[in-house]
Amino acid sequence: MTRIGWKKKLVALGLTVLCLGGMRGPIAYGDNDDNTSANTGVGYSVQKVDPGNEVNDASSFYDLAVKPGEKRTIKAKLVNPSDEEITIESKLYTASTNQNGEISYSSQPDEFDDSLKIKLTDIGEITSSDVKATLKPNSDKTISATIQVPKDAKDGVILGSWYFEKLGQGEADKDDKGIVIKNKYSYAMAIKLTVNKEIETPNLNLLSVTTGLNNYRKVINANIQNDQPAVVSNLSMTAQVMKKGQFDVLYENSAESMIMAPNSNFPFPVFLGEEQLKAGDYTLKMTAKAVDPKWEAKTWEWTQDFTITSEEARKLNEEAINDPHQETQWWLYALIGLGIVLILGLLLFLLLKRRKRKQREKEEAERRRRKKAKQKKARQKKEKLKREETKS
Image (tube, rainbow, N blue to C red):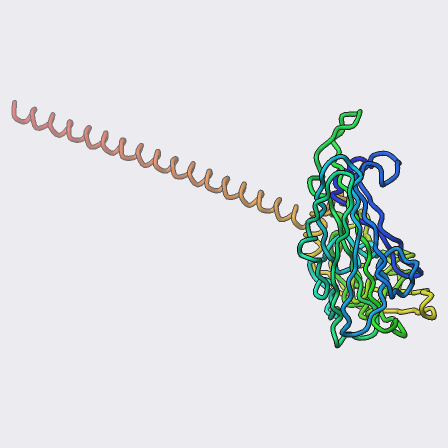
C-alpha cells in the first residue's frame, strides 16, 4: 500500500505516549502528506495544568500519586489561536495494548482483559459543562475532570488518557496533485495513577493460540496477557511454530521494544507469508523478556500445543490477500471428472436405449403393416373365389 493510500485510511491519531522510564506528553498527529511539524495546521492546543502531588513533578502527562479512597481533580488548558470559534470535545479512555504491542491511548477496546478490575473510565468523570468546550477566537479555557480512587484499590498502576478532538474536522481537501486528503488532528494526554506504589514484580501469561488474519494476512496468534496493575516496557518476544512432535521450525517471528498496558492482553502474530495454512496438530514455543528499570530482568517461556482444523485452514486461505494460489485439490478434480464421465455415460445409455426402442417400434409397425397387407390380400382372394363360384 502506498504512503498516501495508508494515510487516507487514517481517521485520527492521538498522542502518544509510552510509559516507563518516563512518559511523553501530548503530541498532535494528522494526515499531512509531507514531513512538516505535526502541529502545523492543528488550529488548537492542549496543555496540562499541574495537578500537584505527582510521582514525577516534571512529567508532561498526569503522573498522579494517589491513595485508596482519594478524590483528585485534574485540569487541562485548551488554547484557540485561530480567528474562528471552535468546539473541543473530550473523553476519558482506559488504556489497552494494541496488536502492535503498543499502548493505545486514543481509542477504547471492545473488550477488556478479565484481570482488569478498575478502569479509568469507571472512576473518572469530566465536568459535564466541559465535555464540549466552546472557545471564542484567540482565547483559552481551562476544563477539569475528577477521579475517585476506589477504597479497595490495590497497589499498582491504573492507566488511561484524556482525549481531545476539535469538532468539525475531516473535510476533504485536495493537494496540488489532486489527491483528496482528510486532515484530522487530536490529542491524548496520558493519565497514570500510581496507587501507593508500583508492584514488586510483573507477570505475563500465554492465554491461547489461535489462527486469524492480521491486515488480511494469515497469522497464528499467541495471546499474551499482562495480569498485573503495572506497565511492562522494554519487552521483547520470539515465537516459533512447528509440527507437533517435530523440531523443524515452520514459522517464526520476533519483536523488540514493545510495551503493555496494565491488566491487558494482545495477540502476538506469527505470519505465514504466502504459505498455505494447513490443517494439523502444531506446537508453539515462545519466549518473552522484559528489561524494565523498575524490576530485574524477567523472562517467561511457554510451550503450547494447538490444532488447526480443515475448515479453519480453508476459510483463512480463501480470505487472505497474500495467498495468490490455492493448493491443488486433485481429489476434487478427480471427483468432478468422474461425475462428468458418469453423466456422459448415462446420456449415452439413454440415447442408445431410445434408439433401440425406436428401432423396435419401427420393426413392430412394419410387421403390423405386412400382416395387414397379407390379411387384405387373403381377403381379396377369398372374395374373388366367391364371385367366381357365384357366376358358375
